[in-house]
Structure formats: C-alpha cells, structure tokens
Image (cartoon, rainbow, N blue to C red; front, side):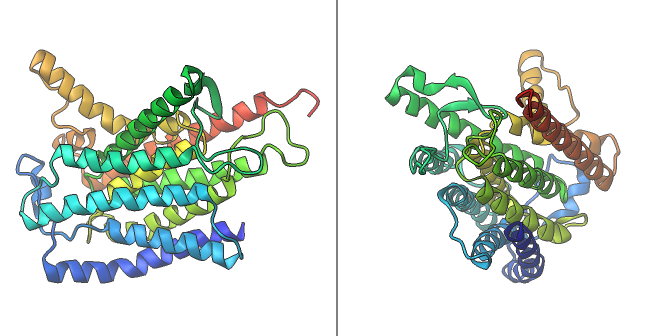
Length: 364
C-alpha cells in the first residue's frame, strides 16, 4: 500500500505546487482561453483565463507514478507504461489543439480529421502493444474479449486470429475516442471534469487493489479471481492520476485560475479508456464513469432531435449548459454533478463486489 499512498501524495503535491508556476508562465505569454460567443453569457468573463493546464496534470502523474515505484524499489510493469503512453500521446494531440486555438485567437483548434487522426495513431499503437508482452502466466495487458467485470464470452479472436486483432484494435480505438471526447465535452464548467476524473480514478484505485488481492494464480485463489496482468501497477498509476487531479482542482475550482484545456481532457479521457481496457472492465467503466456518459448522451440526443424534428430537447448541450440557462449557479451545477459522479462510482463498485461474492464457491 505504500506505493499507492506515495503515488497519490506525490501527484497531489506536484500538481498543487506546480500549477501556480504554469499559471504565471501562461499569463505572461497571454495563453488564454477563447470563449464561444453562442455560449452562456456568464462564461464571457472567463475569456483570457490561462489554458493548457493539462500539462501539469500529465507531468505530476508521470513523476508520481515513477517516484512511487522507485520509493518501494520496483520498476513499473508494461500495463501502466502503456496507459502512460496513451496519456502522453493524447496529451500531445490536445496540446496542439490548444496551441492552435491560442495562436489563431479562436475557440476552434485542430480540424476534426487531424484530431481524430492523431487520436487514431496513438490508439493504434496502444491497442497493438496491449496484446503483446505475455507474463509467465501467459497474460497480456489487453484481451481480445469484450469485458464487463472480467472478460466475457464475447471474444473477437473467435473470428480468426488476424481478424480478431483487427476488430480489437477498432474496439480499443472506439473506446479511446469516446472517452477522450467525453471528458472534453464535460470540461465546460470550472472543476467539473477535474472533479469527476478524480472520483473515477479514485474508484479504480479500489478496483485495482481488489483485483490484485484476488489475482488468479495466488495461493487460495478461487474461481472468481481476476485474469489481469498487473493490477498492482494499475492501482499505483490510478492513485497518481487521482492525486494530480486533486492538486489541480485547487486552482481549477470556481472561479478557475486555469483550465485544463484539450491537453488535459484528452489525456484524462485516454487514461480512462486505458484503465478499462487493461483492467478488463470496459463496460463497468461506463457505469463508474456514468457522468461522462450522461454528458455525451445529452449532446447526441440534442443533435439527433434537432436533425429529425428541428426542435431542441435542451436549451443548450451538453446538459450542464442547459442548467446554466435555467438559472442554476455554476457551483451548484458542478457540486450536484460531482454527487452524480460519486453515485455512479458507488454503483459500479457495488456491482463489481456483488458479482465477485456471487461467483464464490459455496464452501468459501
């Protein structure tokens, strides 16, 4: 447990102490956020607030992850290294997006096709590598099976070895694009996406520790054990990300002194996708990250309704802007959405534990 505690503590300290330096640097360079003219009027005062804060989240995560492993005298395993690759890779795509917004003084950055291409290249490399590096038990970081609480009977490999790998790569890229854009959409109010991400990764600390304690191959392991390659590694990394979000939230909470930008939202979304894939809980992640799913669905429903009927369901999408236009205060919306995120995480953990208990042999 020492490594998990150290990772969370280092992530928090580095992020909390490092963010003010980034704020001063970005302010001197006038790297501020541009606000959509068609958005809520209350957002216009946020124009010029430093963005690209995701840089400090990424740096704090990487140093905390490495520092915690060094502290306990171990090297990180490939599972967490792959997720860190995903975080940095998508962070670079987001950084380019933010840089274009700033340099061209507009609220639109990379063109959609280039953004998806960047996400796709990073996702392709991650997915292919996730099926490599078997350990002594033959487990690879990723699996061609669709997973819920563990791998299910739906296995892409049944289509044939080559086709199975191709379908898995497409599935992994769908999850990466979906989650990174879900966090991006949620990052519309001060502290909303940061707090929701903190809850998500805090939950995965618990899930990963439980998987480690119930790992298949351990003495006295039962039929309800988990076929995950490096759950302890994942617990350390999840703690590092949660700590980094916690420290950043100090400066990102309303009124925000800095925004994470696409640099942070794409990186955190990629981390969510990576965790669900590597921990083999892809569909469970939809429940634990339910707030992000709600935000995405509100935008999808809004677009679909307008195209089919010419009418809008919400005053503005994503849904948090709808409540702003109803007159709710920003802090009220964020706090209540955090509560929803916490309820989703609690539901996910409850289902995770209940399934494990239900699959225990009768004599245990």
